[in-house]
Length: 276
Image (tube, rainbow, N blue to C red; front, side, top):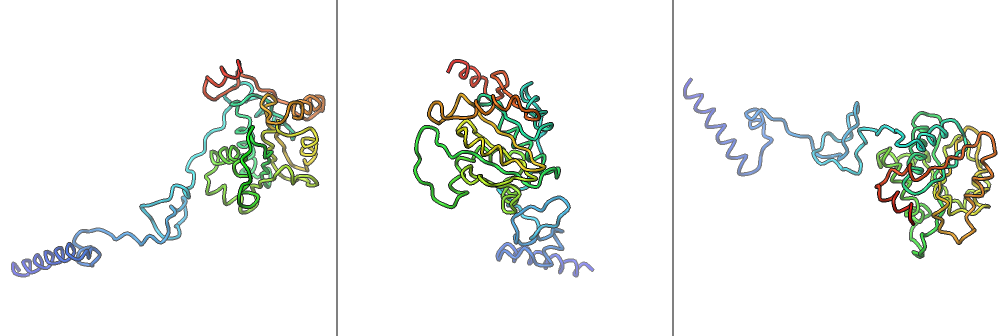
C-alpha cells in the first residue's frame, strides 16, 4: 500500500515537471490533479448576449467596439424647455426646435427617434443634415456618399451611440433601419413610417426647408432642429427663422423655442452665449 502511494506521488511529480518543462498543461493527469478545466479555444472574440451561447465560447479578450450596451440611460428633461420639447415630439408629427447651442435639441430628437424605433412605432430612422463647413473649406473627402457625409453627421452618430451600442447602430444601418439621407437627395421622396431628424437646419435655405418639410409621409414624425443665431450661410440666406414664424400659425405643428436657461452643457457656455 505504501509503495503504491509512493509510485503515484512519483508519477504526479514527473507529470508536473514535464508540464513545466514542455508547457503541457492540458494532460489528463495534470487536469485531474489540479482540478482545473481548460478554457475553450478563442474562436470568437464577441461576448455572447444574455441567453445566447455565443459563436466560439468565452474569451478573456472581448472587443470594446463590439460589445453590446448593457444598460440604457433614462431619458429625462433637465429643464422646462426640454420637457416642452419632449412633450411636443410625443404629441405632434411635425416639431421645430429652435435654440442656442447646448440645449439638447439634437440629442433629444435622436433619443426620441431611437425610442420610437425600439417600440415599433416607426419602421426606420432617417437622419439628414446639410453638408456645410463652419467657415472653412476642407476640400474633397474620399469614399462613398456615407464616408463623405460622416464628418458632418458625427453629432448624430454620437447621439445614436449614446442610446445604442455602435455595434447595433452599424447593424441597423446595414439593414436600412437607420438611413443617412443627404438633403440634396431628398427631393421627390415620401417618407412613410419613419422618424425624420433634420439637424443644423439654420444652414438650410428657405427653399430647402420647404422641400424637406413636404417630405413628411403617413405615420411619420419629423423633428427639425437648429440655432438661427449660428448660421454658416451668408446673412439673409438661412430660412429657418422665416419658416418657423410662418408655421407657428399652423395647427398640429409645434414650434419650441429653447433659451439660455435650457443649456445643459458647461455653465460657461450659457455665459458666453449671453455676451457673444
